[in-house]
Amino acid sequence: MDRLTYKQAGVDIEKAESFVEFIKAKTKELKAQAIMFGSFASGVPLEGYKRPVIMMTTDGVGTKLKVAQQLNIHHTVGIDLVAMNVNDLITSGAEPLGFMDYIATGKLDLNILKKVIEGIVEGCKLAQVPLVGGETAEMPDFYPEGVYDLAGFCVGVCEENKLITGKDIKPGDVLIGLPSSGFHSNGYSLLRKVIELRRVDYETYLEDFNRTVGEILLEPTRIYWKEVKTLLEKGIQIKGMAHITGGGIPGNVIRILPEGIRVVVEERSIPVNPIFQWVQKLGNIEKQEMFRVFNMGVGFVLISDQTNAEKILSEIPEAFIFGFVKSGERSVEIA
Image (cartoon, rainbow, N blue to C red):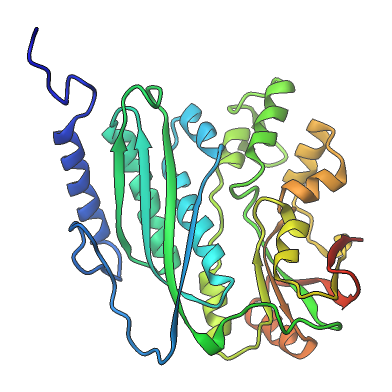
């Protein structure tokens, strides 16, 4: 019997090591740098906090990866990976400290994975957070050729007395929306099913949008840290924040509501993003299901009182009020 090697079994250590060197070089583009990057553990300094609370998130990109892999476009999902984690983290009022990634694939394809890393680094730039480290797992016989999966992890910090929990939300407060860039990274199993059943090709050019279907679907998730950071630094009071991911507006806003608080979302006050109308018509999807699955043009929600709402609108001109808070059974109503 011939002597076997790890490479013959499908794991290329040398290729993995060259990928690590590529990642090290890319992280030098980031303004913030990790301590001991590339070692068994890496970190960032923690300074200026009296009673720091460490906040952590983890998330992936879901089946949006299947669109990226089918179209052989890989950098945008790297941005998505950072966005999904950072946007979750900042709802607490925490400052992002560091981001880590996990890439799993059957066979290392450096041309593809370098594009993914370039997207992750771009996302870290937008989020003003260092890439602290990660793991790339080559698992032959587990993932088919050309397939990879992504997971991300973000750590942040907040003063204990400045955590934004939603506990102070009261009747009379208002909902403020920040626009999404599109579908973000949710609802793609439904999107792909609609496109499959209606026999629409990802390369199909849509004149109304001046883009192909694939370009619309791979639009990266918007990162909201710049806007939230501005509000926090200016001391503008925010009572609650929600990142609109799976579950849509109702399923995510309810997570920050105290008992006895009901939210009414005024659909007419949400700026129309025609891509949602397009998929609703294409798939013959009920409105309730659309709001339950997609962000409907609202990527991030802030809740504040009327006075601070005016300050928020002044700082973020594209923000809009689209609902209000009242007493009642803990719920979110689309009106």
